[in-house]
Image (cartoon, rainbow, N blue to C red; front, side, top):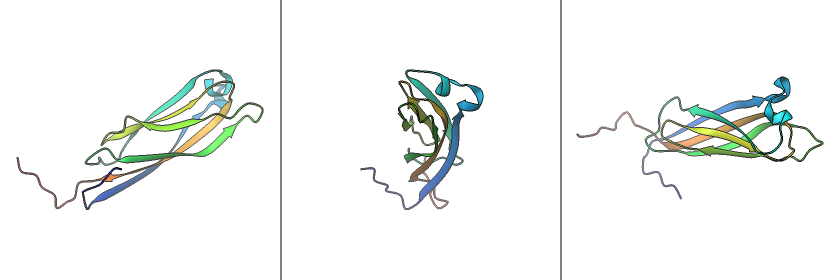
Length: 116
């Protein structure tokens, strides 16, 4: 369990189309085997510690004639951002994916001060 000891908790949210490979004959639409799309998310304001990040697929446009395989995750989470990563494999053909994310964690309070 991640415990937040601060009284000041920040929540940031975002949405990102990771790719639209149908329009460009990209690898997610035309390829086979292991494939990955990675996007660096930079938070508009930093957290005091790495936040908890939840991700979800908000648009899923796939070819119905192949197996539908998807793995969406947040990797390398830091105080300033994370990598939004989508993976598929086998014969899956994906036209487009949009992912939404939410980060929740401790933030700097205007009343906080540090002694050097």
